[in-house]
Length: 386
Image (cartoon, rainbow, N blue to C red; front, top):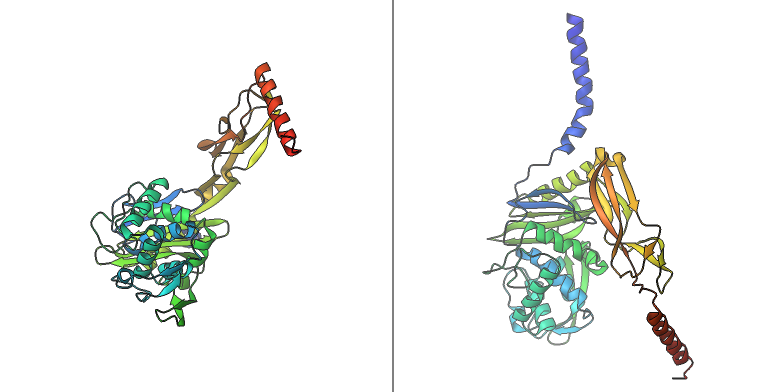
């Protein structure tokens, strides 16, 4: 009886040595955020959410959208004259002065690192003429990115009627922004110096330190943006990369934003794995076209063909690629011609279309003649005959 008791104690001890690792990381962490989400950056898959589609004041996380519009404008090398309205904007500031000259690139840096509300207004006025017109651009861009539950009333995030977003939309916008190397580099910068001219034309250096403390607290952290107002509370969009996997965590109205963001990111890395098969527009093969003016078309992947699964399921992933041996004309660019199917433990969980990269018209006598004329015209034009 005594020996049996000792045996059971030893067995329990052995189990406890191995169980905690799987238990700790299989259950989502408890966090204080009013709303939150954890998203895989490559696939957009949601790994954790809490009120992720609820409207919340986004505070300065708004500036992710402002920054990506500025970067994509093609005007980063413009010299911007700071207006009185910009210089006197309330809240966090990079301490711009009215009449000062500063480059758009340095404004974007100050916007993202120092969270300058003054920089946000200067950017908006330079690119759109007025803050109000820039806000129109912001809402148009949000709609294009399918961040449809958001509406913006200013470029900086100070509390205003009709200014709101969701944890999901902010993660979705950040996922897009992080694909831009300029944006990704800036938000991963801990500290930098910028040069500017004051209103007297005198050159100055200014040190900008990133408000995102997670860059110092978590080794894998590489972005994105902080935000705080009385209404929004402390907010954070955080990104981190480990191996082939980048994750985005958003916490809104969270007085433990640093700890909670780390909890979410670590939970994602330790509980899930990314299985990569193909990228968008990858060519999977060439397919013969019967009865077409061209002999073949390229079969391309229509979207990212990757999958995030719980770590225990990774070795049980299989992929089926269904492409026809040949196809009949006509074929249109973007037409579905096959599919990639992901299976986990023999259950289909995701399908990605394979599409034609080209249009191939049917081979009729009239189209053969027209094609001959077109090729002849191109040949003669290349020799300068026409």
